[in-house]
Image (cartoon, rainbow, N blue to C red; front, top):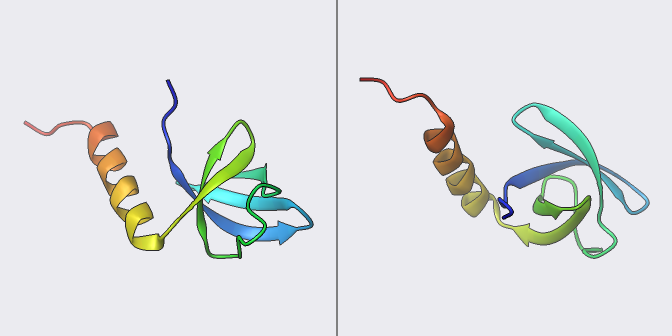
Length: 74
């Protein structure tokens, strides 16, 4: 099972994007999405950006993920 988490594109050099999610920085290929620009949000699978997602949807997804992963206060 895969969990699709939006990552923000911070840098682009050739076909490699520097991406960030929750302060963690990685690199991913954008060869499958040549239209991606700095500031866009993408879904990464196996080191490749496979889908571009708009900022509002990315924010909603990240908020929902944060709620699921945050400890419940009783």
